[in-house]
Length: 629
Image 1 (tube, rainbow, N blue to C red):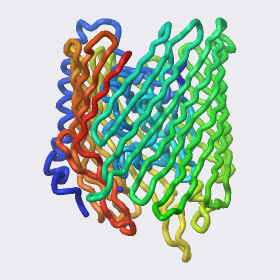
Image 2 (cartoon, helix red, strand yellow; image 1 turned 90 degrees about the horizontal axis):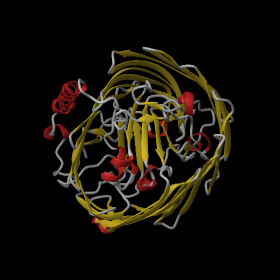
Image 3 (cartoon, one colour; image 1 turned 30 degrees about the vertical axis):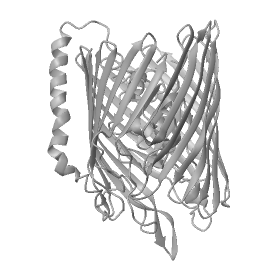
Image 4 (cartoon, rainbow, N blue to C red; image 1 turned 120 degrees about the horizontal axis):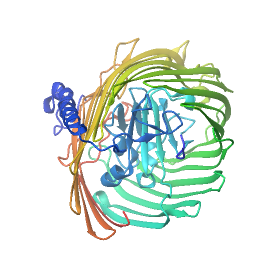
């Protein structure tokens, strides 16, 4: 966890998904690439060097709380590293995540508009989002505000798919997305500054300085984005967005190995929508201390606070406030036992809300203890974990996780796992006046997964098959003359994920394909706003002082309602990019998004609001010039 150790289609310009890219081609494309990757990789492996490319087998910490390569983690993981983030230069975190294995995105338009991230077909409230080990979310609606995070503040994104309740507690049903800021590791100061802009009168600027001096590491960053935005409905006005973010990160390691540090990140701005606008704040702050108690035992204490604040101003003049403050104290311990590791700890978390709405309760706390064993019996590896949560609002929950890995020769690892998790009822579901139901129980899930990964010096491929069963799903329904949330639904989500990557000469190639069957077990319908098929292809090439790249993302249809009557057509978009290092330490980047100007929507307004599709941005171009990129 820590860096150390929503009409039945869109416009006429966007045909249904099958008419432009058939389901069979969608399924076949990554398999064809995989065949080439595997053949090429095995051919190269006979004379490969001993050092593997860590970009293809990256070290991840979100899966197990300790550093493990992707092939060792016994989990389905994806990493978007610094190089990929800088090349693509996305405007939002959702743009970076779109089309990644097992990831689905639904948004009410672009540029700071409400966004949901679904991992493995589970709801947005069932995905944990963290920044450098600090959880950030709204306790009132339950989900993170993905749309307000500035990608240039982050150095790396880790996506862990599958239940992680044992390590992170409530809501880690679909998985965990963790954003990491940059840690100054190189000696001396390293400044950078980037200026640019483009379509929709968008202007961006960012500055950063990071480095080390003795045992002290530091990072100071700031960014500003201002855009007129685009229309959210056909014939509507452009809805703007602005974001100002600042980051400070400091740490010092003493001669005895002790380490202390702090992090603070604050983003604020305004986003307009149909019928009003919102001022927002997203903030995390934390201090930590690491202590090597013995050569085999290390301990870390983290105290943190996260804020999700929203002041909403409707055009009618009605204003509302929904602020969440989450305070956390967490104690993590890692014990080395020869080839094995034991991770154990405790966590206290308190949520407090401030609102113009008179909630029946405005705070709740949660106390948890957890333990995890990471055991290596080469060629067999075993991971087992258990966690107990005691929540003031909904009582006690126990979650567990068991994973088994087996090395099939030098390059392949077979894994299987079973895990449980739960989603906690939100403050809105429990306590919203006249609506909340304080007798709600948490949603509970069980997931079984089987996967295999092939890892080579210049290539990898990963295949995972899984099933998640969710009981006591919370749904708004009429019961006993009362419309309120109740534990009434069940869901079964089955899926297959395939990802692969290949490096050859100056080429970097990647592909990801996902098939998901997110079914409401009571109605047999597809869960709301989830696509069932997704494909992403990335290709980048370095040519001297130039780098060129392209990304293609395609998804099939989804439904905007539980009855599956409102069908939103599938889509495919192509993005192009080019970078030119025109002078020492100076670089220019050009990105062209949605090159063919496809019109598409992943959500629709309710019938009460008018029933129109939320339009995503069309073709756009952005140019940036920077020093020290």
